[in-house]
Image (cartoon, rainbow, N blue to C red; front, side, top):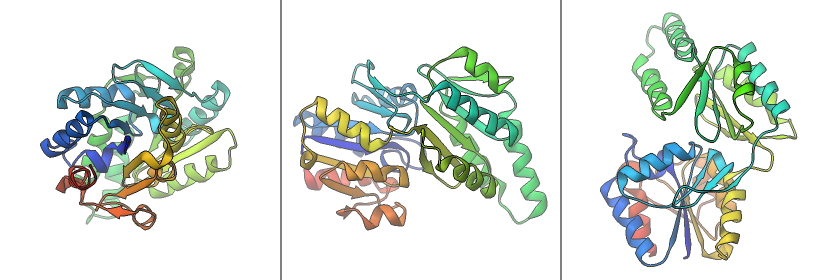
Length: 283
């Protein structure tokens, strides 16, 4: 194997949002043997770069669900942005539906000034409707979302259109499942956009030519690596395109069913050093 494409959340990161010592050691060992490592994630590249730096790892970073590719030194190799008129339509939708959102640009993540208040209100409305709900679960999900850093807060969604021409990834977040489903369905048929992922509390949008799979293929082409020499390791729906670009597909033990069903192997969970476990067996 010449290239290992590894998802971040739920895969390389454990539930404490950390890369374990065993996972770090397995990556470094593979690199010493000449294997290229690419971290492939929905997160912004600057957030991933910080995580890897703290872990003492240098790797290719495919960020924003494939919209950006940065080399090991942090230099941008390739990027694909949503067009400005499409960006405005998305932002108008988020504002109209009173939804928390994030917009990934090259250097910052734009988000509404009142975004955290929006989620807090949702949490307590749900709690009032169902007193048995555990608010800690919602609060932990919100804190994970807020932990990415490099946020720039805006008072109006239209301000973002004046600040940047780079719209790599749009993320809509809500504790109301119907809000997430409605947003997904609204944009799913837009030919200019790709619905990058649909998770419990969020959905994401990128340019129609963007996916984790497209980015892995682009990077492999630059490195002259064939499909059969690529391993992909992931856990969620947005990893499916990456699986299609790999010769060997590895699902985490904590993966969703669809990922497990199309994987060649299933490793341990992200809290059991599943990445290190499978890399030890394969390399």
